[in-house]
Amino acid sequence: MILQVRNISRSFGGLKAVQDVSLSVREGSISALIGPNGAGKTTLFAILSGFIKPDGGSVLFKGKDITGMPPHRICRLGMTRTFQLVQPFAAQTVRENIAVGAHLGIASRKAALAKAEEVARQVGLEEQLHKPAIDLTIAGRKRLELARAIATEPRLLLLDEVLAGLNPQEINEMLPVIRGIRDAGVTVLMIEHVMQAVMSLSEHARVLNNGSLIAEGAPVDIASNPLVIEAYLGHGTAERLRKAMEAAGAA
Image 1 (cartoon, helix red, strand yellow):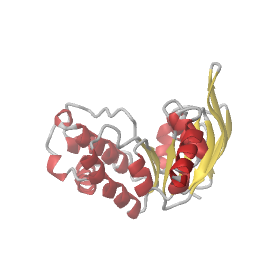
Image 2: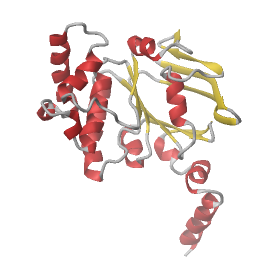
Image 3: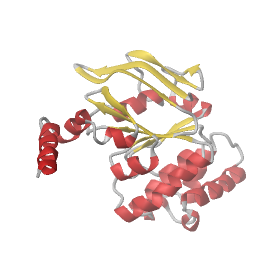
């Protein structure tokens, strides 16, 4: 397992944002972390990547305890994350933005810019390299956020709603990009609300609700789990759906 999370907890005042969460991620996989808004998903990502220290528990990456390490050290070890709110360096070109990520392991400016071109081809931004980042569409900025992360040469990539805000066509165009990242040797753990992507991409899904893991398994099984339906749609919905399905079957 490339990632092992053991009994991680974090509270903010009286709010238990993450409660005793344990999970593991198999190297070479694409897996998903899903759940309603406010479930604690992004807080968990922040803990894994070093932006927030947990109150308890541990995080092991490639067998090494990285609990509480600062983000730059975790990134150098090979775990990189993207952010929900995409904030590129607006006045810089796409090439220069990607080169910022490449500079984590490349000192030479020329080499970093060359790396940026290579990564741009990987995510479909090769025609946009000369553009100021501020001129990109939402879909382009999402690809740029992905490219900056890939330029750090991660072993594990944490994607935080990289498909949010995209239309159906843009989502369909991004799916092979994410598969290509995995095929290039990068393990992917993704937070995602777009169930089309979860069902299409992930081999394993986990559901977080009120800071706790409530279900995990194959995406097709997760989608029909009553606890998951309750978490997304509210109290009593799973039972109403069950009765409606029974009534339809009896008709």
